[in-house]
Every structure is written in C-alpha cells, then in structure tokens.
Length: 186
Image (cartoon, rainbow, N blue to C red; front, side):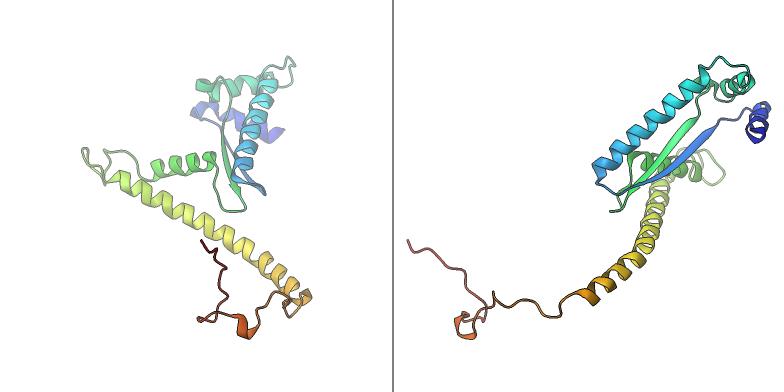
C-alpha cells in the first residue's frame, strides 16, 4: 500500500496513469475479441467501484487518481494486448502497436522530418509491421519447443505402417498409374 500511495504523490508532474494488460487466448480470434471486451468491462467496473467508495482510508488516493487522469475522471487508461495461439492479434494489440509507432515516428515538424513531408506515414507502417513480425516470431519460437516435443511423443507411440485396406491393386490403376475417378455415362 505504501508504494501505491507513494506513486500517487507524483501528481505534481501531471502524469497520466496507463495500465497494460497482456493476455492470451487458446480459442479462436472471435473468442479473443470476446475475452478482451470482458476484460475491459471488468477494469471499468473495478475502477468505478473503487472511485465510488465512501471510506476515508483511500480518500486521498481517489483524489490523486482524479487529478492524475483528469480527462477520464480519474480512470486509468487500460491498453489490452491480446493474442491467440494461432498468432492473431486483438484489436487492442493493434491499437497499442499503432500508438507506439506514433511515438516512434511522430507527426512533423520534428528535426528529422520538416513540416509538409509525409515520410513519417510509411515509417510508422514499416515500424509497426516489424514489431508484429517480432511478436509472431517470438510466439512461434515459444510454441515450437512444446510442439516439437509433442510430435516426438506421438511419433514414438504411432504405428509405423498405415493400414492398406484402401490401396488399389497394381493392375487396377489407370494409364497414369493413378486411380481414375468413375465417370457417369450419358
């Protein structure tokens, strides 16, 4: 609690509080989006419960939160970054990457980019694309080891020969040595 109160004392610097939530979904992309909406609602409800409390213990903390995030009436900005195991990123994740790209490649005028040029736009896109590729590569690397070990376990327990009940006899194959699809005579 002391750390929380110490953090809130930084109100003199006119900071905004932002919370980042990284989460994974084992389901589909639709399930990932649903989970993200549920998480956003839970954060909103939790903050509303905190800010509406009447106790004196956290009155000073609530006052500091209202000051730190005055444009959102005290609510911290919550950035949700979700990914499903298939590699799809949530809408929140793409918003986070877009926000970081805007910080990395700001809108002119800057020292590197004088007013009137649009070179910051492709630079943002390229930077964001590179970050997405890095995230996906990390996920592939993290998932490859368990998959490889799972494949090894399956291959040691699997039969070495496939059943041959469906095999075509040598003389029954067509001229190209492949089974022919029966055709209906008209």
